[in-house]
Image 1 (tube, rainbow, N blue to C red):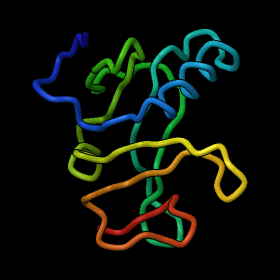
Image 2: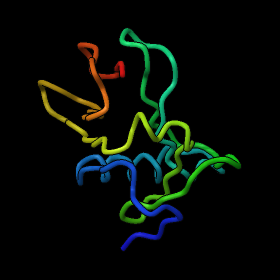
Image 3: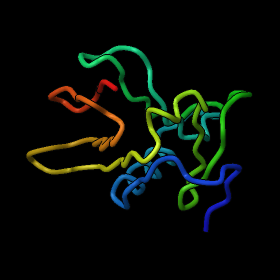
Image 4: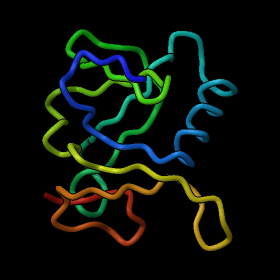
Amino acid sequence: MMNTEQSTIPVQITEGALLELKRIHKEETEPGQQWLRIGVKGGGCSGLSYILAFDEKKEQDEIFEIDGLPCIINPAHGMYLFGMQIDFKNGLDARGFIFSNPNASATCGCGSSFAV
């Protein structure tokens, strides 16, 4: 089912999120952006913001695959993301990707940034 260079997959992606990511990958990505980058960056109201975008692979990136979706993560981000679940909501009360991160000590109201 999954081909990976790692012993474990660092994040879980729900079926709904996987369908949306595959749709975006097929319809909206530029040539060369075949990898789903999952990561963090400084910023946001709680200190760190999530990265979820299609990108080119960089030398230090670790590769893993979730149900046919090629993913990459910078190993330095793993400690912030390991065990996180990514979901997608498409309803009247919520729309977009939802991050459930067991490593976060606090999150902002919109759920797009967190503190550790």
